Image (cartoon, rainbow, N blue to C red; front, top):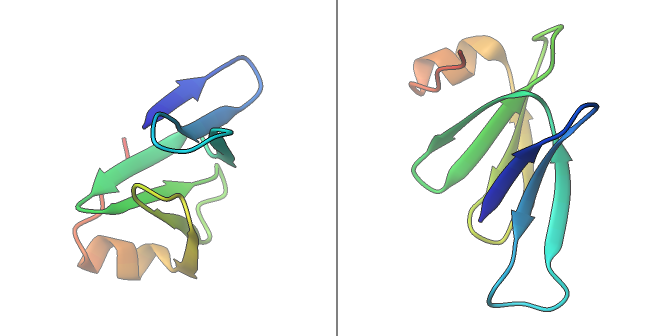
Amino acid sequence: MLIYREKHSTIACRFGDIWPPGFVEIQDDWSINGNTLSYVGYKKDAVGRLSLPDLEVMDSISMSEAFRLGIVFD
């Protein structure tokens, strides 16, 4: 698992056990909590989530639900 931030985007990448590697564009503010990668955009209206390590898309949750689950963004 690698998270890479370039000038215009942030990318989560899974590599090593699969080919070709899996890439998913996420937002700049992200957090890992257990086996979930959560991320939020600058408007902070919903929290996107991916399961780890497979990067499968999970249902989005509200910021209040993320706070209740202990997900913290810088």
